[in-house]
Image (cartoon, rainbow, N blue to C red):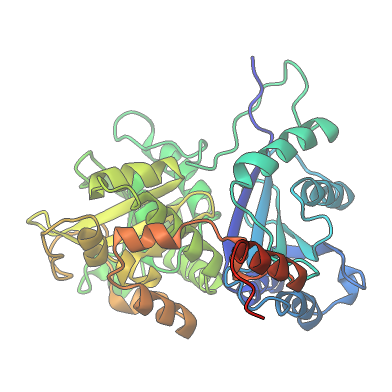
Length: 431
């Protein structure tokens, strides 16, 4: 039997190295990550504070202010059964950066412990020490894929012959199957899903949590505001039928072994409430990339994003009108309402971008996952500015924006001179 991939590499670029560094440093402060090493820094990672780490990256980026998308964020993900030492993770990180052409770049290595599998994050930049820009076109398909295969062999990451393992559950948790009423013992089946979702996904409201749970036919319910369970701060979990309606007898949160009560969820909300810049950028990029196809409609978009590990949960009124949208990113284990990503990614924005003439309904009526505006994560001023500037962008304009960056935006002086000479070839000497 052919072995599956033992290591998975995910590469993202962004406009702010400060945001990417803050994302990882906030994880360190929360106690779910550690900066374990660095590359091409003047001092070891343990001697650097956050300002020093950032200063090195900003200083080199300042050599070329024309490179707008100047930050690089890479995650290397390993099988849940493995427990690599810090030394081995650093050797893997160094080998990977060398093989993709970033061996001489300054970079930081963070080990994250906030998911069901071991993984490290690498933070770097796209500006060389001479001020020129690093071309990353097709780096994932070419250099990264080659590096992955070589590292698997070099560090013996491929499982021994005959050893049976499950694939890394990136697209959907394999250990959290859908709960079907009457097919298995309800409480046991629900417990498996709750253990997988509640402890590993980043949600900051009950509606965001339910966006994930309903994918597995479960809903957490506080009851109506005038009900006794709501007034006493209680919580129950329902199994949903194929139409998304509660079926069978609900189970109180306190009856489960892990005690997923309202108080438990509120503690998770606080833990997950930090700004999700990295996750927002991944979802936006996936949506924008899918919409480059001219024949893309909402149904096809949902299908395409699902292939990339992002489930789209649509909330509809009793009349079937879409009034809300939530994105569940199974790779980043993150849940985000469309409005948190910007107007272009809200229900109304997506209907318009997909060419749907039906207007989004007001937030009322029966929806799959109810939510309130107060539960929406707030955007940063920078993100709001970028999103406002992108309102109404056509597919043609997006195609231009998504073209690979080219060397003409900045190169060293000696190359500029050579290019000017090439343009003047054959022209009369006017000096």
